[in-house]
Length: 420
Image 1 (tube, one colour):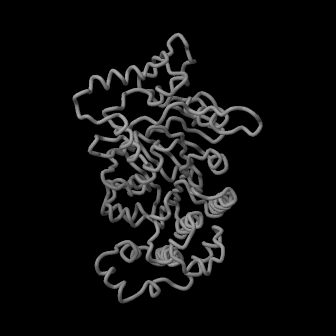
Image 2 (cartoon, helix red, strand yellow; image 1 turned 30 degrees about the vertical axis):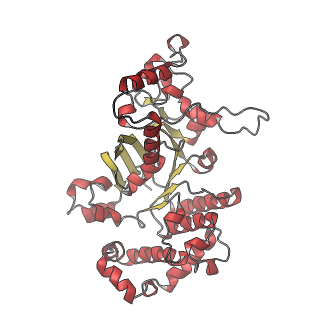
Image 3 (tube, one colour; image 1 turned 45 degrees about the horizontal axis):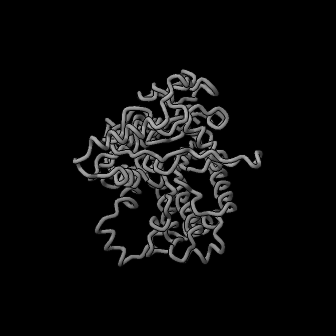
């Protein structure tokens, strides 16, 4: 196992170009994930977590677009195979995924990268049985191992010819019995009852929780190097949640698989992650080891998330929710300052300037935060007065009267929808 990261995201920016304006969904995100590490990205809904994952895999839909940055994936075999055709994408044994042609990048899904999506109902093909879809993923991986050069054209290059042939030759001639048996094993591993019978059922015959478990099985079918789990325990009861997390943990331990875990559940983060990045308004505002973030948080947003979790040791203690909402990410409404300042109980005059990523000065050497409190203590004498941002918003809206007529609420809705 190498000490160098298997995945490096540097300065990635993702924009949605909507009728209401440019939405800055992901802003200068840097992430490093080592071999066998579980890196958790946590934050409120609308923080940009899922868009980060979709940007990584090249799954953004219009009007979304990655406008800047690099995604370096360490794979000596991949680097050797693409260096002749795309030399600008290769740096030693690393490949910049954003510099690869779309067709080539698609071939990496399944064998190198796989993803557990939030909404399994829209991710499964409703016309095929669940077992058949999982078995096809297993078969693609099996063929990739035996003949990696031809697998791209056979399993990824699906065009008109393959579509017409599907009416003549069913997928049963493509998928081996071994792959079907493995699909049933995967369904059993994720807790599907009667997996032999359930494998022959279609997605609409599954309950929501069962379909989410089947989605996990499908993502694991290709035995990927990097697994991106976007809210993998959504809609599951606590017992099944524990089973799924145990499964991911066992798989990671056995295979050394690297996991990027996206969640708003701090309990899942505490259970699974080695390193944590706290995301707010498209930025990683604090990062560090699990101990750094949970035991020595610096950013007020991180403290707010932790303060929103019930404390079982403090019976009768009231929760401390974070006031306000995630801000609009429309470019013309975002100011060059700390994006959390309008919700922060310790906002000072310096927070009206954009904070750099600073050494947190507590915990490990890799503990950093985008907050001036890492460098200077809170000073009430220079604190922003109550209502500062409300009055600023009122003045801005008054100045905009007679313009486009788009209300703040409509802008927030559009930004939030794109960011999810």
